[in-house]
Image (spheres, rainbow, N blue to C red):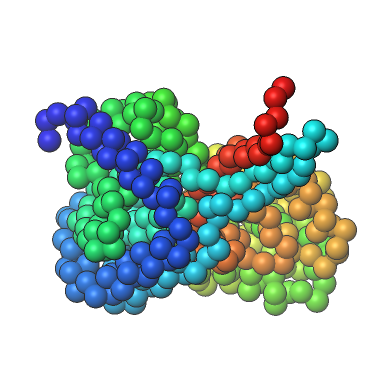
Length: 422
C-alpha cells in the first residue's frame, strides 16, 4: 500500500457516511443485525480458527511469550464466547434516544437532553481477537461507525472476523462501511489516520502504554485513554475472621487469568501493620505456590523471607505477569496515599469488615473502579452487566472505567417551543 493518505481518507469518508446511516436505525433493527452477526460468527467457526492458526504460527516464530499466545488463541469455546458476547450486547438497552433529563422553562420552552451517537470511532488495540467483535458490536449498538486497527500479531484473525461482520451487515441491508478494518500493519499509517479529524470523532487506543502515548502525541482527534492497570488490594486491620476470604481474593486477583497478563489483575498488595503478621505470610505462600514471584519491602521480607527486595520502581510498575509487590503500611491513610500516588487510577480494592473504613477507601481512592471485599478481576464490562466493553478508561472526561454502549454516545439538547422569540 503506497498511497496511505488516500487510503485513510477513503476509510474516513466511508465511515462518516455509514455513521449517518447507522444513526437513523431503530433499536429493533440494530438488535436484529447483531443477532445475525452472532449467528454468522458461529457458522464460520472453522474459518476463524483456520485464520487464527496463521497468527499463532507467526507468533511462535516471533518468539512471543506463552501468555501472549494464550491471549491470541481462538478455539471452539472462544469463538462461541465471541458470539455470546455479541448477543449480550444485542440484549442491552439501546442507549440512543434515551432522555437524560427534561423540563419546561418558565417561558414555556420544553428542554430535553438525549443520548445520540458519537459518530465515527477509531479504535487501536492489541492481541485478543474477541476485542474485534466486541468493539464492532458495541459501536453498532450505539449507532457509531468504527475503524478497527488491531495489532499485527492478530492480523489474520481480526481480518476474518471483520469480513464475517461486513458480510452480515450487507445481508441485513446495512452500509458495510459501518465496520472497517485497516488492511495494513504499516506503522507509517498511524500518524496519517490520526489527522483525519474531518471524519473521525474519537480515538480509543487500548494496549500498551507506548501505543497510547504515541497516539496522544500524534492525534488531532480527541483521544480517550486506556492507560495501565497498576491495581492494588489493601488488607485492612479489621480482617479478623476473614483470613480465608483474604487469601482467596488475593490469589484470584493475581492468578485467575493465565500469566496475570490483564489490566485488572492485582499488581500490589498493601497490608495494614496490624494485619500483616496474621495474614501476609499465608497470602504470600499461597501466591508463591501458584507460581507468583513476591517482591516486598523490608517489613514484608521480615515476615516472608523468600520475597525478593522491592525497588522504588516496583511500586509504579504494572507487571502484566506473575509478579506481585507487597508492602506493609501503618494506616489506611498511608495505603490511600500510596495508591493515589503510584497507582494508575484503574481498579483498587479494600478487604475489611469495617464499614467506615470501606466508605473512607471508596471516597478517597481516585480510581475508575473501587472494590470492597471483591477481586479486582471484576473490573470488566461483562461483569458490570454492560455486555462487553470497548476498554477501561483511565481518563476522567467523557467516560471512566469499563465502557459499554452508553459510553459511546454523547448528548444533544432538544428545545421545543410554540413560536417563541427571544
